[in-house]
Every structure is written in structure tokens, then in C-alpha cells.
Image (cartoon, rainbow, N blue to C red):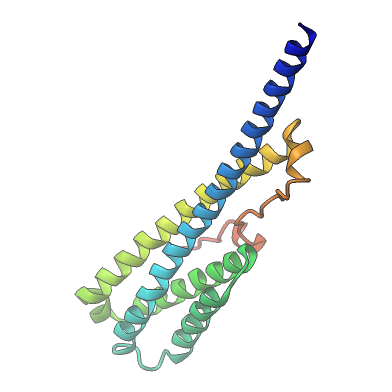
Length: 182
């Protein structure tokens, strides 16, 4: 009878360990998938930018520095490898795109150009998707990090090679409330 109780405890313990391990694997894969979704949206934005620049160039030939900044920021996003680097480069690109759209304000014909309007709308939609993807990624990373840090998971997570993931965050400068003057 004692052997059956010990066997039952061992079997239940093994099932709990397998459940914990499988749950951690599932969450780690969700983190990877979520980060890949951010990459998909960043690539989409990067693919739209050359078309937008060419459209604006036709109207604003003397705004060369803005085009160079956007191109440089786009290249930084494409070359970034880590979560932190991608976040920093992506935020820099968003800032340079704001400059590009500000330039367009000086050219009424450009603002009325159907191609420009369509590209601007697609970029705005893509920016919204990037924001949603970042939020989803951070939610999954937080869940994963919590899971590997709580008891009894923390006793298994470290020895099995599970490490906390980095959140996709916004630089401190972008957290400040912008000044609005009339």
C-alpha cells in the first residue's frame, strides 16, 4: 500500500513538472512569435518609406536633410538585432517620419496628391499595428517573466535555461508630455 502512495506521489510530481515545463515552452514560443509580429510590421513600414520619400521628393527638392534622416533611420531599423536596438531605431524612425509629414504641410499640392495621401494612410495604419504589436509583445513577455519567477516554476526555470525577456520600451524622452502652443 505504501508503494502505491509513493508511486502516486512520484507520478503526480512528474505530471506537475511536465505541465510547468510545457507551459514555459508555450510562453517562450509566444514571446518569439510576438516579437516576429513586430518585425513584420517594421518591415512593412520600411517597405512603404521609399515610396513615400520619392513622392515627397518631387515636391520638396530642397528638403534633402529630412530625406537623409529618414533613410538613415530606416537603415538603423533594418540592421537592429536586439529588442532594445529595434525599439530605439524604431522610435527614431517614427520621429523622422513626423519631420517628413511636417515638411508636407508646406506643400499644398503634395497634401492633395492621391499617392501621398494613400501612403500616409498606410503608414498611419502600420504605426498603429506596430503599437499594438509592441503592446501584445510586452503583455506576453510580462506573463512569461512572471511565470518563470514565481514558485515553484522558478526552481525549474533557471536550471532548464529559461531567462527573463526584455520589454520593448519607449525612451524616456518620448514619455514626456509634448508642449502645445497656440
